Length: 455
Ligand SMILES: [Zn+2]
Image (cartoon, rainbow, N blue to C red; front, top):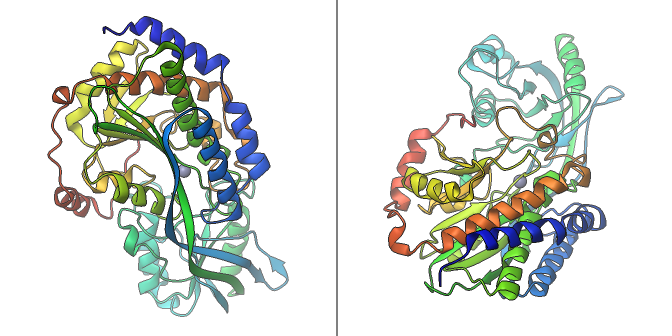
């Protein structure tokens, strides 16, 4: 049967707009449930909610997939200089500490700045600005932290580049190597405004008292899965996923109720298309919301272990979609570029397919890439010329209002159109993926210690 794409697209976009549950999902995930740190009560409520939605829309094979998460929790975290309590969030996976030491200003932590203070760092607390030093070769923050560890600091207070006393949770290591990405010492972040005070106090040789209560432990966490079976090529599949968890204490409107909701909405639209117009996908469409993206992609890694011994044709990851409307698809390996662009062209909206020049470990497409699987994220206004709301992710102010309802409707419609088109391309039409784990490993090795270029 020839598919009538005009009729299909009309139905998809009508449903994406008028049947939308975006607002409802945002209220439940961000406001009723709130923060969803993987393995927490909030995450448990969220996965039950998502499972219920998948069942309600008639997906097949719906389930929660449990795995043991290597997680972390923090309690009291505070830093004082005399009686002054500074703005503070611990780094993710910050080890516990109770210490007092003089503060040394290490600037941006780049080599020439460390040279100026290297002999003063042993046993001290270093103050380091997290931004890149202007006009110098960008050095990833984790490499600068490693240099401070080698110089013997006992803790780091990082200065958040945001203003207005906003402070985010940050990660210590390079997640291109998640197994080894741990902080070498306790690290906390303070606001730009309090960072300035600490810089002044460092000159006066004043001391900082730092207490972080935290613990590391295993706990169960869950991915949520469901699918729509394809009718032409059983076993061939496409994956659409996004993480449902958040960092500690953040309701995660942009990061990542937006992506989670786009997964649910795309699935709902395509399930409806099948139920109402009898249009099936050609390949299996697998939908997933991942746990623990914020904890070194442990959820997506588990998904890849369970489901991807045979490579899916493409896995699309949705993260932080409150970044303006969709502009296209970003691949990590080049062989599918023309093929995907060809499908985007049939949609007639000027969407573009690009290929990143480096492997990007900022979200859940990375565990797929690591195995040599074609995985993509979306090109949106996250990058050059950012949308204002895209600035909110790892902080309590990433609330439901940071999620753009109308834009998410468009995302779901475009994703449904694209997935359906891709699923109807016969396997022999797809350029062959010859990548292995080893070739990817080699490439990651070559790209080590570089800052990933995002525009
Ligand atoms: Zn995210």
